[in-house]
Image 1 (cartoon, one colour):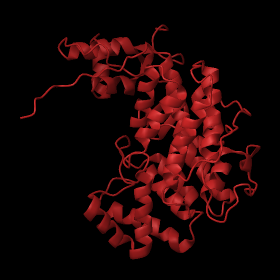
Image 2: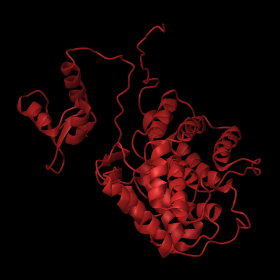
Image 3: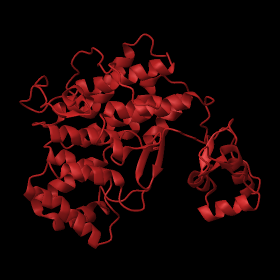
Image 4: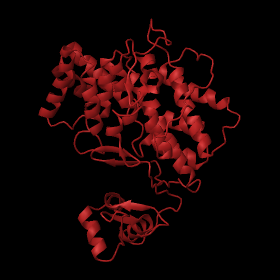
Length: 401
């Protein structure tokens, strides 16, 4: 078995080649592509170099720009049952461990506990909205770090822990809620939730935090921690390729995630729930389709059926709705299914969570952004192991008339 190169599983090799699995196996039987047995002997693996060489031959020998990057990752694998973090399904982690454990798994490959999740000491931020506060926190923390260019993995991870805690700490609290007021105790696996990122974040976003809500927010943080090469993650990797420090690389991701089609998608789903409660599910769906021509929170480019992350969130959110409001979500799902609209995705679950909890309309964006710092940092660390400045696309020039 090849041990000096990165190995791809069958599905990934087929995706790289742009073929189906039977065609991949036909390449193997015809001697066009070497295969290697996995250590346990039950799977076929393929060297990434062999796959890329075959892809080049299939293009008739045409080469691509040498600076274009092929991204191979061991951080997250996307499967039909949802994202898998270093071999562990995120859907299982979501209800069994705190977010911090999932982040450590993404960063270091284990769930070893740590006490380094303390915020940087920053003065209260100016009168900014939640999204601006998150960016402000990263800028100010970076400006105050005299060794922000220390790119050793242990230093990067230590900064990432503190940045997540800082982003939570600078958020405003709901009106009439003291940020220091305790979150009701809840234990899972020996962890006191009020001492976790999920507990602190829930206290900042929800007017009445309770153990069930903290559990749901924690699940959302884990399910959203990473999703392979999402657009914001690519931005972080490009910054890492130029050897930007972690603060600047995260700012690149924050800039992309601010778009309404990425981190803000759950806000559109929140509005759909609000309209459905006010004017009824049927009219809300029709009005949304009239003005947006699509339903926010439905369909996903990766999953052919329902987004598995939605099912996990719905099971937790169902317990948060009063019975009469829970029916709104079920009605939306039924109406969409009757019209063969693509299945619900994680943005719908996040919109339902924030609406059920009485959070502000941008609460889902805040949860999404803080959650994704774990994945961004994992990809940042991975990119530092690659040759620098490897992302260089080429444009096709077309003169304007």
